[in-house]
Length: 146
Image (cartoon, rainbow, N blue to C red; front, side, top):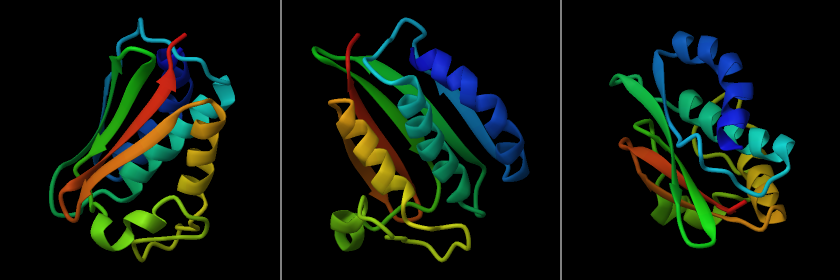
């Protein structure tokens, strides 16, 4: 379940979030389940949440909010933040490319989003992104309903 995966990864994220002064808001419905390999689901969530913390804005109180929504064949999981954001006009096509980075950040290797998208696709899902520079990013992860 999504909740079980979050419960497995969030305890490890709390100290990082506190250090970076980012609130983690978990609004996932505990009844929402998806068809997934647990290790993949944890890796997907971990990557999007840790990116949201890593690219938080120093100019405002930051948060990352995780929600789930049931749809016909899919459950939509959103990971939304109010961080640095990405210029999708300029970088949208490269966003999930291997070794692509969009901020001068010493820890950025450019494989996280590439790997995460491949894991989502391996589970029969898809991912969309909405982002505005200096306003934040929302990743929309569609995974098949259980």
